[in-house]
Length: 372
Image 1 (tube, rainbow, N blue to C red):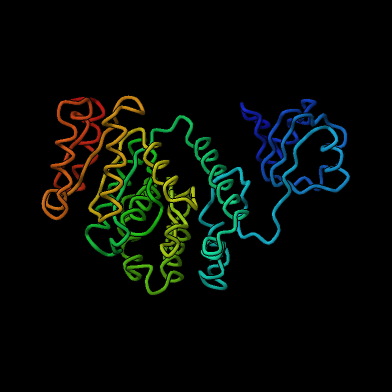
Image 2 (image 1 turned 90 degrees about the horizontal axis):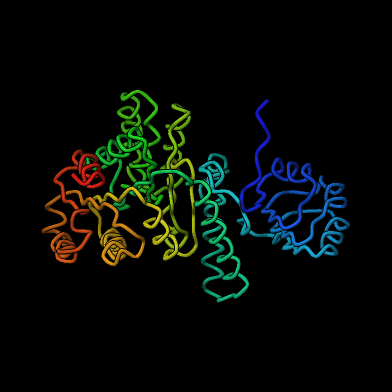
């Protein structure tokens, strides 16, 4: 049997196993218990010291709830009839967000229902709803930081319009595979297009090279999430079912752009309601650098969102930035000349690069990282 899990250093409890371990050590005092079903742990709650504990969205029996409150614990009960858990302690999985896809279509999934709730509550300005969204997003950030401890994260940014079956999509997938095989954790905006392709590449990393070629052929039959998200997502799950055991990567999408579904190839998904929190968090956590594939307004915004802390060195030493496709970034959307001008004479000048093709990006990233 595997050894029992150790408690989190900050005394967060996010599973029954961690709860039982803390009780076995004699106390729950000062712990934070996140979204753990404690209805079958009444005796433990009645007998353990829960002084100063906080229970966030943990179902428990009434007598147990009364006792821990009497100890001075704070109890935030689960919110009924909500399509998401605002107190969750872990990141989402594709299976969780797309539950029910095969039986009832995308509209019935938790992801789609959460987006519908967001649209409704955003329109009526309900302060309780906005509070729940803020709690949820903070919990997601906490879970993301815990998941990425010790990881070397590289961000891959690019447009959602990049269709399956195109050379650009295949190139982004190869990029994700190369980065994952080099020991980096690939992080994307978690949506379709270039984001999905990079997550797919990371998923393919443990498999033989032929797997990615075959997966690209399968996916090309459903090029886009329009007109049917159900068909688009179903094709991704078909790939996952045919080649299980793929590599892990991170997707960081948002319900703010809920018409764009998350992709199913990111092993762990940090989905936010607030897009500003999502954007800043994705870039801030890309500590090994960011590769920018061709995109439109959103990708341009991400370039300068990343350039600003590099310019001011507000997060410490500047991180590498690699822009892919010289024509796109110098003529179509001439972002590169402005980035060069900003970087001139500053520490970030040696941390930016422009390459012609996606196949050149990994070497450019490594060069910027090593300082060569």
